[in-house]
Image (tube, rainbow, N blue to C red; front, top):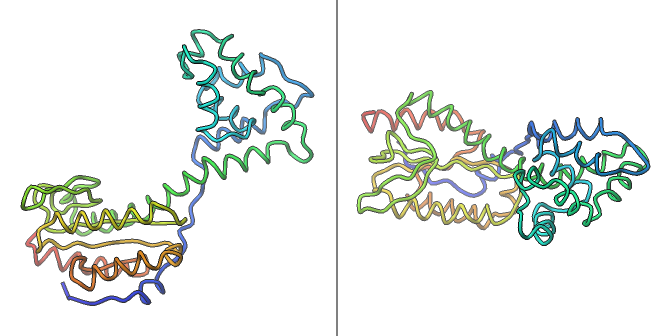
Length: 278
């Protein structure tokens, strides 16, 4: 594989947004349930049962949306009340009255009536809460998975089944590290690939520096290490990306790739396959 020295400017110029749908199947089902939920001036215990009985987890999510609470806030509030029974489906089924009483005590019925009778379509606010809370987390997961799935498709095209994915590989002196792809195996990798996509800044973007350092410290010096990434939010974390480029310039990372460098990624994998005799 040709040795090159990349620079921060060319990596930044190649980045593109990672656009994904924040809705998963659970979100779609919840939205449909919200849109078909009966609009009343007031609600009663039976309305809560109708939320929880068909699907407890979805029903609890809807209750949380009505209350406008984060998952942590909602769990903390219920655990503070249901100290002896827990807050899962088993606790609900074993003593519905006590469970529903706990939901009443955090103001669920009033919140249902207030939200259902807002101007416009009352579910709009809850859908937005779903989007900004659970949906935001799902979108973040999917951005990373888009990059990983894309890299896997190229790896499979070149190596067939000669790789292990999301594994812990072994180094020459007993060190171990996690990686997204170990080729041909985690026991004796000749090629390592880490793939990460980002759509929002935060601690997760800094975590990758630690992951990269661990891989570099654990691998054989002659094991090729490739890094596949994308997402325009790297532009807000240039200092972190600059450190990764420094790893590449020092020879610790063979090459950094983005979606716009797919042809080069596949060509380099094929070259490495020949060089490694795989």
